Length: 496
Image (tube, rainbow, N blue to C red; front, top):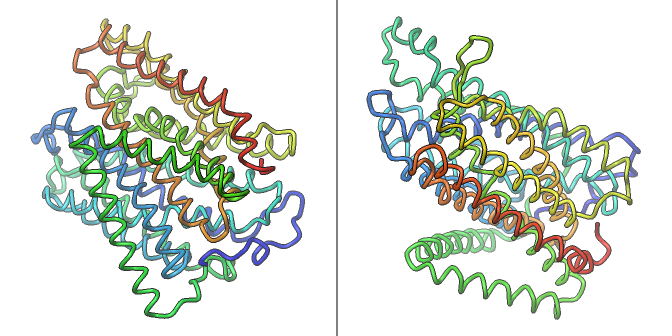
């Protein structure tokens, strides 16, 4: 297997100190997220901007669906990345290859013709699928089973993610949208309408720094994520299987989109499989079944949360007064606020989980809190949407939404990463971590699908209904999960 047992990389834990390898993975992921969120902040805005302003001139519906399909592909391919690590070259090499592909994708998007834009999206999706699940699995491998520092370690790792995500929209958004930079380009003979592509190029530079950081810090990881002990023939056979799996998964997604009833049939089959596995699979089976319940909650969470880059991004551009103390700022800068809250609150949550120790809420109860807060965030936007009918609204509405979503995110996302590494059988850590990101991918697609109707009825009651209906759906899912918490805790068989 690609992931060594935790005992191979973790020694007797110091009560406060974390493994040295966390530093390497922290900064590598920070730069990878810089590249990802730097481009993500611009994606819908670039697609929906007019051709005269350097964009593609697409409708809101088409732009939101591109966003949904792209973010879905990014996380769906994590299943492919987990398999490549577990069955072909190991996590440490998979992370490196993924980073190189991501950087290539961003630099491809820096070219100013439409085919390069789509080619870049494909490359970034593939590269992120290789890197994202495996670097998270490696963080889990730094800690022994039962180590109370694990959730705190993932919260620190998550803060690194958000350091990159905070700075990226500020810098790429400035290059893409700010009039000062456009004037600077024009004064030097460049086309100011191409400013979007300068933002994409900066994202590529960030990923390149991440690759260098990773290579320089590999010595801190010992043999963590080493390649599995397989023959060359077995490696090539597993590589071929991985491409077949991706093709089958892509075909399933395409078919489900064109024949929606198949999606419900698939969901029923998965549900029956989980129930059977929980009943017949022993302790491992029950724990895997618990993971799938958390997967379902993850889908609902990200269907709303990920609209920060689509419907909320458009609300910021079209309905919000983007000035502060007389200073006008790009609407994409709101994409940094969530990360600013994460940076502020992640140490508090990390301290809280360690402080509470074995008395902290169980993972499924933390998930329930996460869903509840993201539902509240969209409920908050109902009065904001009504006020937008009278003119541009205060930025504080979006700040409040992002604060609530951040609290929910800290209750769910880093806890989910940690819980999967605790519950997954050692031979399936990479695959089930990929499954976590596959569930995230479904939520990301749903976020784009739900956002496609944003603004169709203008501001006021129609826009308020857009937020109200989704808030009610999340509150319903929160109530269901709360009822399931005792059952999920039993399925987890002693793992918190």
